Length: 120
Length: 107
Image (cartoon, rainbow over all chains, first blue to last red; front, side, top):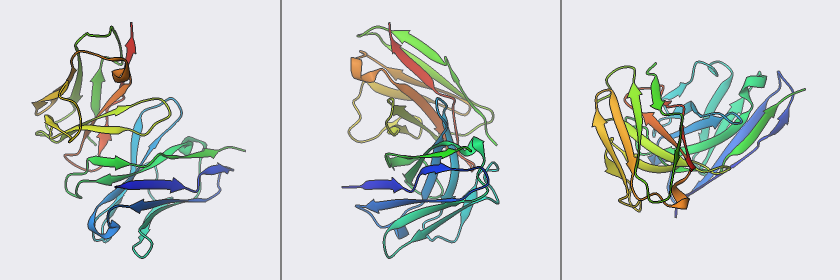
């Protein structure tokens, strides 16, 4: 059974950092592309970042480029999102999502989400 | 970036009704479109891919169509569990983008 479990969310001050994790089971991270998608309170879905199956290619939304970094640990089957220089507008529920493939990134499995609140 | 526009933004319907939601892309995306259902406080649930292919386990009351720039999601015989927010997503190119959502409410 495929499962994705996010952790690491919380309250952080503007300018601060946070590292999100997504522990996956039921499949191997090295075999699938993964993305982070966020949802601000009461708003729609916004894609944030993606990593290819090989891990060699990483893409970011313009809104987070230069501040967020996607990575993974194959040994623990865990995806990460390092978030630096956080802003109020980064406040959202962050979901990790498994893509069917890198070239056709629609998402067949999602985690339950972790809430990030950026506020002083 | 490819912009996705859904209409309507909200929709009221009754149990047993059939409804259609539209999604329009700002440029042609062939059939690289997916649909998701989201209930309050829950993660999105994957419904349809390649505009009209039903994900395994999704009831046949859901159907999708379209190609190029115009797409539709149709839900027939609405049941209480179908009242949720629906999103389209284009995966023709990065950055993938979502429509703003259509909230389906009980009349």
